[in-house]
Image (tube, rainbow, N blue to C red; front, side, top):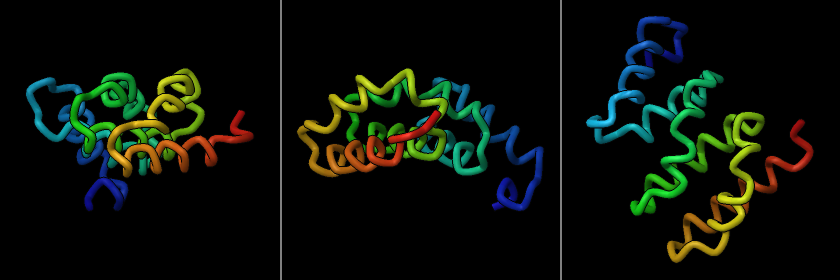
Length: 104
């Protein structure tokens, strides 16, 4: 909430949480940063897209959707997730790919 209000210290807290490998909710921190347009969220995309946890894959796809320019290097992995065994992941991947069309 504070990060949405423009509080720079709140953004820094999110960035620290994202960088902490022991923090259990890194995907959520990445999505929060991405929604603020903070490119630091993209650092987690690669790890999130290959996670064994379907929710983490969806969080990573959400970051891709929010930061399509930053996600261009992950197009092949996003395309693979269209056929993910978790239906919600597959649908999310399709939506992200559609949203990325025409992104420079």
